[in-house]
Image (cartoon, rainbow, N blue to C red):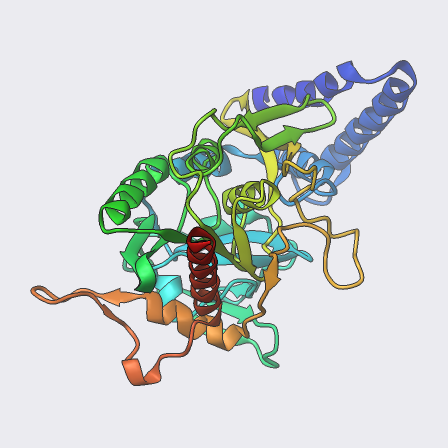
Length: 420
């Protein structure tokens, strides 16, 4: 009964910020809710769980807002906290909700989902034979995660493929690989950043120092399928390349005043020519970083339009194990572009939102799948890491090759000017 009173108090508390006229309407609706609860409790054909009814009412209240604003029951609230621990039994995918379906933002490199061939934008339409239509992210995560070594059956719908595809995937401990780097031809450094976690800034700084020692003269930063992560890491990485106290990103919401994140006066790699690679799996922090570099004319962005997930969620502890995750602001690039995808607004060519590259290169889904597999490395003791795909079966990475060509052209142009 204490839980029910707590939930009802939450509902009443939410009316304290309303105007007088809207308060009257809200109180009437709450009274209506309580009348329905009382009538149902007394007259329904079977005994009802009052707490379950009220929880469903609160979830329904938030559902019209966006997929990321959620009322969290104790199990869901605990699950949210597990995500911050960085290690769990699961498949290794980032998901969201689009058109009421659970949708893959990106598979994480080296994970069971990645190895099985799950792709960005795949819609998970069934989990263990049960439809996911209308299912919340938290509920889907709860069903997909489990004890390492156990199996889960999922069915996906993929754009361009007529029939649904079934997968049986074995859960594993998910350990996030954050970064890979190497030197390419013509002293071009290459860094692939897979996620923004608490070590990303430190890891990329170390990679840049190592590549500089090897003679790096330009850089390719690969953010393809990077689902984001910690805001401070994205901002700090931007500060490596952007100086002069320039604006990197700002947040703003109806009740949240504009908050700006700016560069320092000096940036250690402010003059380093660079190209950034993005695709539809690039989300959140990777969009913030790409947007900052693009708007500050600091890098050429190549690839396809990014995912468009850049909203700020505040997590409120409601007591008794309950939590509320509420979208309170959105991210904007320095030029004022809202990164977050607005499904209700369509342009003539694409959904508004995300980062549109300077050079758009659309890669077919089957080629992207092959490129994901090629990037997967097999480690054998005493040998250099090798691609999981045989050399004769590999496909061309058109986006990466275009980036190399651009940096070569920049170098040649720079050398010509020096000779004048």
